[in-house]
Length: 201
Ligand SMILES: NC(=O)c1ccc[n+]([C@@H]2O[C@H](COP(=O)([O-])OP(=O)(O)OC[C@H]3O[C@@H](n4cnc5c(N)ncnc54)[C@H](OP(=O)(O)O)[C@@H]3O)[C@@H](O)[C@H]2O)c1
Image (cartoon, rainbow, N blue to C red; front, side):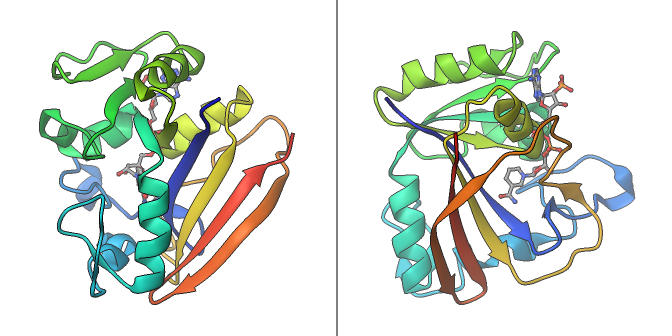
């Protein structure tokens, strides 16, 4: 069975994006005033084999490409979708189909994207089907929290960046129950530590 995981760049104090200027709309990578969360994508000398244009340090490239190659479909929260400029009608991954989870209609959804308004279970089921045996990646703290609540998450990956942002959008939303994790790998790399956990069931 394919797995469901999330991989986020996160500050040490638990934010996946910074402050949004004037509380307004986001664009680009949607990180507000914290673009440094993704510096490790491009500040190395090893090209990614999956994402054209990314040049990472050697340990980051090895870890990042192994994870990226597993992705067959992605489920993003509506806020991530909006903050990423709808990925220009495409998706966050070069080959994986994008599913957007929301409670509302999304007129801007493109033909290569799929909107799901009937809940996290339906979004993950549809993404699994599209993934053709590969894994499903979750994007956004809200979507990740919904999936954890539904006990649908197998693995959590934190690309932990050594900064305390102090404010922003929190990775860890409130959960109704405790979730236990087992550390599978911890890989220190320039500008980031890759923490790979599995959810203990
Ligand atoms: N650092 C990183 O690696 C990284 C990765 C991804 C995203 N981000 C950033 O994270 C921020 C967004 O994260 P977030 O936690 O605020 O939001 P999010 O998870 O992207 O989106 C939350 C929204 O998704 C919809 N949603 C979530 N669960 C749902 C459910 N069970 N049923 C129906 N709809 C559901 C709702 O949309 P509606 O309100 O429309 O109903 C909800 O308001 C953005 O700034 C983005 O750029 C960072």
